[in-house]
Length: 402
Image (spheres, helix red, strand yellow):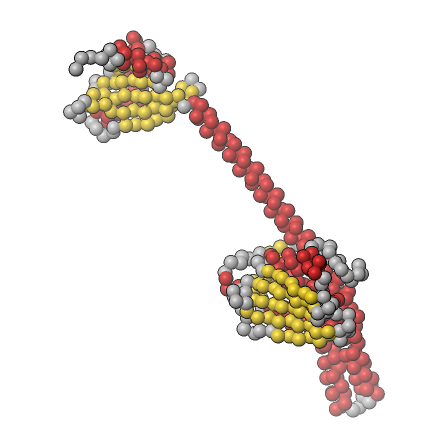
């Protein structure tokens, strides 16, 4: 086949010289036999000075010995390619070394391809710095969000405390009646003892009655103080029936002032939930007070617990009060929305109730008919689902409210 003018040696050299990549060929004797124009610029050498000389002469000392080892490794077949990044004159070059063999597999030499990757390296450095800056901003923003979240939790604790004080204010009249009755009994017992101190049997009997009355007063005061005090927000395993029993014993005093009949249907087989005892306590106090305010002429308040189909703990609080107008149903969980007199409501009770239930991964819904009554349904996931984690938030102000 006749030689094509496009395949002669001069044309091939011109093609290789036109490339921006540096190309150097070292033969099996370690001699430089080809250097294209780009390689001359990259290596700062002239082909007329270097061609025919050993590549080992381009290096000194330990580096010369290292190059000799690498070339020997190529010649002996221990290595067929090598990759190395170098920096020279503030530029980065990607060097790729490949073994060249003839058709019979005999070692002919090594070809070196050098490509300028300075722009790529600079871009990678810019990207690295940009990523570091972004990571720092994300870190700062995350810290800001975490701080804001903690402040929000503290603010919520303070709002809950405010609602507690509001509820306690509504308990006072009924509480005074509950304390006065046993207190009158204690006084009568003591008068009887003082009138006839020699009567040992009477003194013993009346002393026991007096102690019983004082115990009732003590229990009421302790429950009130326990309900009112500041506390650390802490989720633990709790029995929701115990929460309801505690608050019903306290709110029951208030219910008597309007001749409201309390019906309890608490299922003892329901599983525990993972939550904050005091927050859930205040949540159901809000619902019960809401029911109380809706029954000015007395009525029936029903509190029921059961196991929902999905395994959640279900709590129903229903009343036979005036009901909620249809146009207000979608707004009752909004902050500061209230249909009560200003002296009877802050507009935060149901809003806080909704937030607390949401924080416990629960749901709250409402059904109501004007003139018939209202029913709130709360669903709380049982602790058996294993999705909860320990959580604790402490109020900044530790002073007691009582």
